[in-house]
Amino acid sequence: MAVFLPLPGNEALAASLASLTGGTLGRVETRRFPDGESYLRLHAELSGQEALLVCTLDRPDAKLLPLLFAAATARRLGSPRVRLVAPYLAYMRQDAIFHPGEALASADFAALISARFDGIVTVDPHLHRVHSLSSLYACPATLVHAAPALARWIRENVRDPLVVGPDAESEQWAAGIAEAAGAPYLVFGKERLGDRQVQLSVPDLYGRQEREPVLVDDIVSSGTTLAAAADALREAGMRSPRCVVVHDLRRPQARQKLDGLTAGLVSTNTVPGATSRITVDALIAGALRSLGEEGSGPGF
Image 1 (cartoon, rainbow, N blue to C red):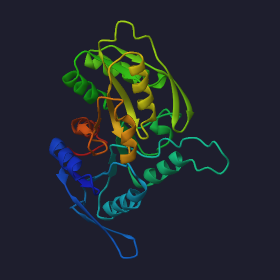
Image 2: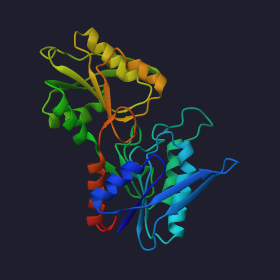
Image 3: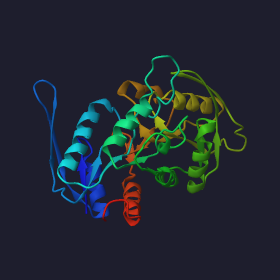
Image 4: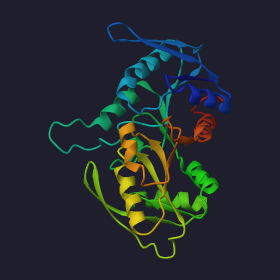
């Protein structure tokens, strides 16, 4: 039997996964000592039981040490296998060195996680120049794809949708969502002019102006790309688009960038927040059950 152990802020997801898979739910107690160091205690019977630490890794720096301490403590308590369930996986962007002396953070972060965990389960990691997690992580990685959940939301909430990908890299992903949603799709051409500036080329919209555009993306942080795409669609005569993303990482000040340009943004619950109205719990639970059936995962 697997024991789900939620780091702070992940209690709802861990409880849902335990219910969906027949696992048990433990508790992670954390607090700060007066000097700022972390105190951590696991409340669970782990001897002979697989430990599944649940921790989405947005804003990861403050979460990393407690997470590593929890993994080490689980082993000390007798868990033969410790896995990480991280719906959002951090440090995937910094995957190349552009200037001498820069950290290769994606590889360094992967080394830290791989050293402590026997495997990770994550949702749609932001793969860019790195094309697979296996080239970064030494431990087995299971990828969960949120596209079915996004397509279902579009199907149930948007009449006559037109799925729009923000750049050529998103074409395969946008095409899959569109097919599952029973909708046509198109993608923009994109040239990035800097960290916060992009230039888009609008594809042919002939015969599609009456459809409701739905911008889809795996991640939104600054909102620059989605704002540029929404503005381009409006200038081309389309109505204000809805935005549907997997991971919403925006800070409050960045949310204003899309105000007035879109008909709203919804995201999955990989990063809990005001926009996370699409649940991926069942998709993660399905991946965990498959691991169990393969004999390399939880004993569900």
